[in-house]
Length: 393
Image (cartoon, rainbow, N blue to C red; front, side, top):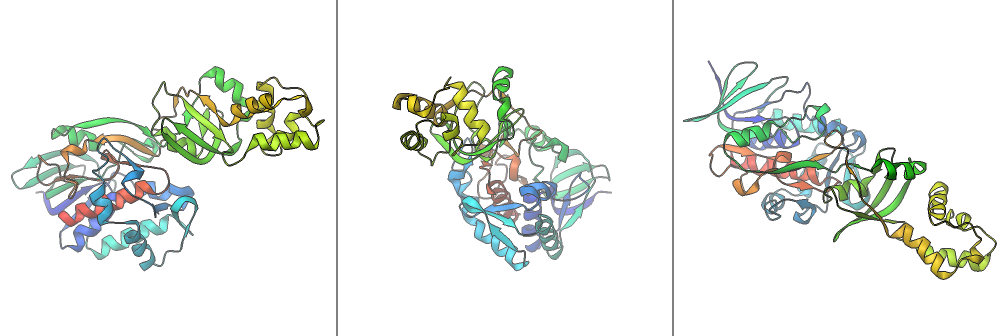
C-alpha cells in the first residue's frame, strides 16, 4: 500500500527544503526525500563552511540562462532581504564580505538547522537515505517508487540539483525525469570551475603556482574583478571561477593583473628616482617577487631601469595587464560549484516552476537552466525558486 502526501519533494538541498517550508506552511502534507545521509550537504561545505547564503545585489543580471528573463519573477517575489529576515529571526549572526556577499559568522550548519526547524514547524517530513527507483504519472498525480516502497503525491517537485561535485552525491536524476516527461534540455556543462592549461603553458607558468593576485578577467564584453590564483593545474580564484561560466573551449581570456595600479607610472617613477635599480626589483615592489621575475624574464629584460625606454616599459606592462591566455579546458564537475544549462525554462512556468505540459510536476533550483554568479547568487535562486514553487502547491 502506497503512502500518500499532497506534495513529495525529491532533494533535501536549499531549494527543496525552502519549498517544503512554504508548502507545509500553507497546510499541505509534505514529504522530502533524499538519498544522502544528511540534508543540505552543499550548504554545509559552502563558503568555506560558513555558507555564503545570499547576495544583497542579486537580480536577473547576475544569472546566466538561455532565457535571461525567466528568473525575474521568482527573484522579485522572494528577495535577499526576505531570506535575511528569516536568518535574523533565528538569531544567526552574519556579516557582509566584499561585493554584497553575506556569510554566517559561525557555521553553515546554522542555516541547515534553521531550515530543518522551519520544516518541522510547517509539518514537513524528511526521509534520508532513500533511493528513487521510478516516477510515474497517475490520474491523481504521481507514484514514486523508492527503496522503502511506493509513495503517491498530488504534486511532485524535483530539487535534486545538477551534476556538480559528484562526491557530494550529485546525479543527473532531475534531467532523467525531465526527459521522461518530454521536457527540453539546455546543454549542461561545469560552471564556476577552475580552468586548466595545456602542458607547455603549464610548464612555463609552473614557477607561479600558489601565487594569488588581484586581477580583472575578461572574456568578450564580460569582465570580473576579483582575486586570481595560479595553480599546478592552471588558473583558479574567484575571478577565474566567474569567467569560467562564460568561457567555452577554444576561447581566449585576458588577464589584467593589479588592474587598479598604474604599473607603468610606478616603473617610470622608479627609473627617475634610481635608474641603477633592476627592473625586476622595481616591479617586485607592486607584484609578488616570483611574478615580477617571471614577467621580466619573459620579456628578456636584464638591464637597469635607466636603460629601459618608455616603449620597453609599456611593453612589459602590457604583458602584465593585457595578458591573453587560451585555457585548455576546465577541471570539470569534480570541482565545479554549479552546473550550467539544465531544464529548458521555455517548458516551465516562471511563476510556479511547474512544467507547462505536465500539471503537478515542478523543477526548482540548480537543475533548471538558471545559473548565478559566484558569491551567494545561486543560493538566492534556490531560495526564490523553492519559495514560489511552494506558494503554488
